[in-house]
Length: 189
Image 1 (cartoon, rainbow, N blue to C red):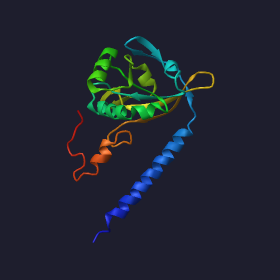
Image 2 (cartoon, helix red, strand yellow; image 1 turned 120 degrees about the vertical axis):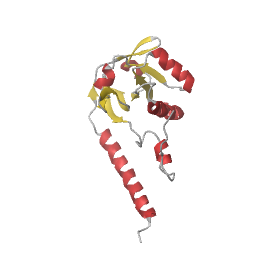
Image 3 (spheres, one colour; image 1 turned 180 degrees about the vertical axis):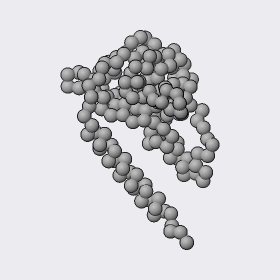
Image 4 (cartoon, rainbow, N blue to C red; image 1 turned 180 degrees about the horizontal axis):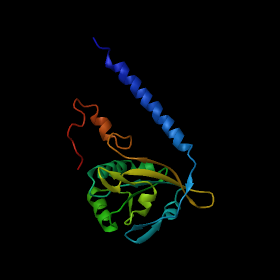
């Protein structure tokens, strides 16, 4: 007879929560790195990271693979729902290589309220570590970077994290994990 699973599950949940707290603490202990004041694009032209830090001293930049990635669009759908809460604490933008006009069409179509910026050459995305090799091809990878305005107005990168199925940045898998067959063959649209 096998032991009851509930206590094992509760212990793993507690351990996972403690590990996440430890990870968050370690990320906050990283030494911020001064970075270039990168130029990105919106429908009106060039936007610098320093401009995004004018309203708030902190900024979250979601590195999105673009509109062709249904997973990235799903993460964006989730951030859209949390946007008013996020923006009470920090600035927030989504960056992809898609041209600004395509981004704006997607914003309208999906009802996204956050600001989207384009990194068409991918230099910012690459320098932040989000151009990677995956399954034999090199291209953008999803994730998030945090930035802050330094004491002399410089842009500092504070921390980053990659996105992938079952991460803590998209709750859908955590919910599906409670179902008898998990996510099964489900795919986002």
